[in-house]
Amino acid sequence: MSQVPNTPPDAAPAATAAVPAATFTPDQFAQIIAAMTSQGFNKDDLREILSESQKATATMVDRVANPSNKVHPGKSAMSYPEGDVARPRPRIEHALFWNGYPQHKFQEELHWSELELIVQLKAGEYDCMQKDGRTSHKVSVKVKRDANERVERIDVTFPVLREYKERIPPLYVWLYQMVHADTLKPRQSFMKGMSSYIDLMYEDEEAKRPDAVAV
Image (tube, rainbow, N blue to C red; front, side, top):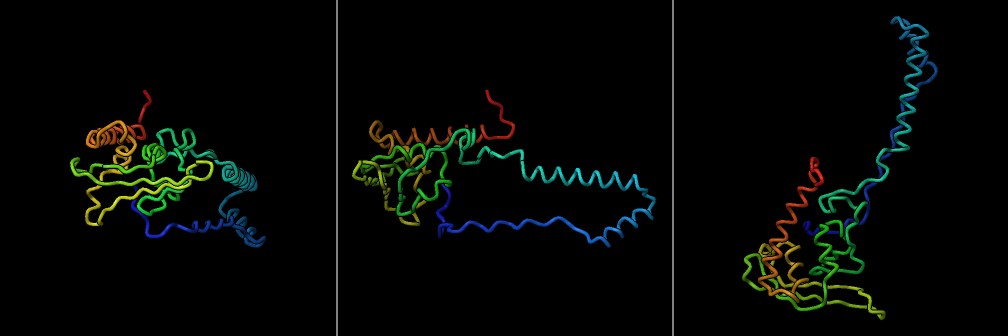
């Protein structure tokens, strides 16, 4: 997962102003024609040059108005190999605070595999393994629901000092342990999560290579 930003990006960057096409006054245009005529261009040559120039301008205008990639596939390091258009990533449909960080506001930071696990989170107190696969770490997941029992907010909290944050495994492995806590023991879920994470990252990277061929 991407590093937590210091402050959320509130405003989108200003759009770049369009650059107007070059224009000439009648006198400047007459000077250009005179200069070209002095270089040996006759009226037919000038007519052909102007015709080609008009065609090029029309083509440029058409490409701007009708780009060939009107619908971008939405492929990125975080998307499924097919791209977000063909296969949208899961969405967090409620507030989700990860140790106080509003992760639901920055879903673009999350890999599709992480989102698949996040949407499966359930309330509970979990014993998750740190990177060494032996040290247990307490993780609390609290779920708040509305009057219709729909999830309104999830808070995931676990105490960790800044100097020990490197002991926490990848987000996917952390989530895998919580999602599979009902069926696997902590060390088992850690080992399976790490194995799954390595295989998944390799396969995902291979599938997104420009020269990848579907089998």
